[in-house]
Length: 173
Image 1 (cartoon, rainbow, N blue to C red):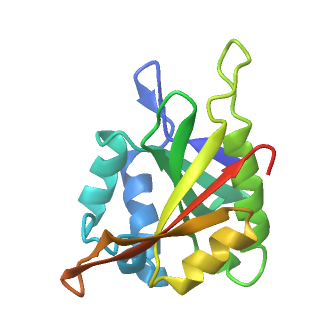
Image 2: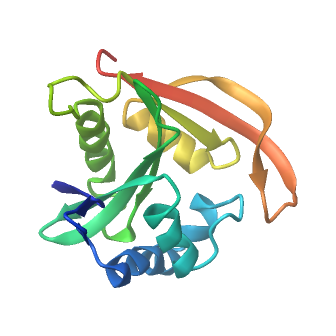
Image 3: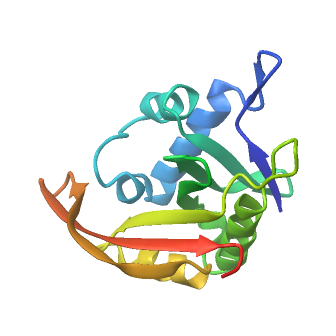
């Protein structure tokens, strides 16, 4: 597996806009877009592109044999922590999606800057509690559940707030 960050190098992004829009299209085809974005913040390809191009989210494309098999992104980045989000594509469901998730989370935890210092000592997660599949997945990839906070997430389809599961992982755990 190769993890490729969506970054700008010397004025050129690692992926063009069409490719990033295609990642959202894949989520729609797989039936995961509405679940991943339960809060209704992203509803189309353009919003998805803008979220990563201008929204302070750090996107990483997970690839096997040069094809995307999932994405992860970090936001809420502070001195030594960030919040992670995942979406695995249907092509690896039931196959190696847990292994891909484990490799990805370890890769994120072991990212270092040019001085050799780790970017993140801990990665956190905020998962809508009603998404039982996602809650099970984050546990399988090594995230530790701290508990639930009532009303922390907004579920657009229900028009109401809902509990969220709080989780974390460190290099040591």
